[in-house]
Image (cartoon, rainbow, N blue to C red; front, side):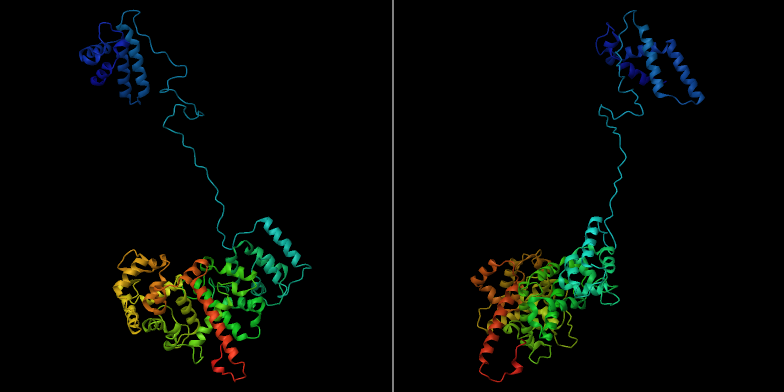
Length: 541
């Protein structure tokens, strides 16, 4: 056995516990000789010899030594030998044993709960398994039982007698059961009547609307599924034509167009072009479900179904807006071949645009033309142009003009690129005897207006964060709007504050419609004398 650990144990003995009157407190700790004497005396005790001998035999036999038992035996031997070192009757009393047992040696039963002593060894409970309900359904979420029964009850009421419904009778099903705008009735009817029998039975409608889980979809998903062609995961412009056809045939605000089918077609085209301009942000002509949900078309369709005055539906469907767009195109298309070239477009807005920006538009960098004629812009291309020109606060417009100014296509507008377009503006100001504003001064003004992340260039992100970013493009290539911005009319400012919900396009279309209608009224009055009307000068309406 090692001597040093035993000496330390002996030195750690409390003299007061040993009741050695001849020793001062702390003497064992300070005098190692006394501790050595006590240790040697313990070694010669009979019980100590027996203990040491048994430990040696166990070690030779290769038995596992019970450390706890050994320690307890040693302590027991020590305690039994201690009285022999003291006079009879002078042994110190032992510490009273707790009835509950020492917390250091107490063994806990298998069913014992957590310790009340706050042991850091916490009992870790097994994690509770939580069942997550299914949240994705490839073909739509199945309807709840009560919703299904309620819908079936209304279906039985409308399909009374078990006979199918004709297309003219299907309008109530679209409106009351499907909760869709009424002008989706025909396209929904034909979607169910795949065999073109001219009738939709109750079972066919239940199978399509309830069993196919259309009933639990949101309206955007329902409309998307109704309009899209089989096998396609997007909508094209042609998919909206049946809806516009029924709208023109049934909406009370468009009854006056019943006798002019050519203008019905132009109205439908204009509405579809406006929808894709605003919602199809990728610009590929393929409207996805995500784009449909992110846009405001669904709310516009709902308003359209409730509002009899078509001109109050400013988003996409206003006839006045169509009238302005078409008349503007008609004014520029002097030969009425439904195509305009650079010389036609340069006259737009009383020659407000520069030649350089018009050339840039006809390079088809901002948008590829659909006219299929070299050097010519078609009606659809013009719709995209006029919407971008008259409302430079919208994101499609900012993207349109950003691509025009970004000459090298690197995604940033440098001072050199902006100066290239502003040089023509500066020359025009000099020709008009206007006090020219140097580009350096204009650049500082634009930086203060936009507050870009890096003052050495503008990014599209910088422009989209600023409400005044449209003025940057007016400064660069539209002289009339640039001068109007420099000398803003307080009346127009107050008017904008009174109607903050109106966009720049809404205000422009309203002003132009009044102007065009007054011009048409004046022409009608001047031609009331019976003079021969020159058809080449006739307005489109």
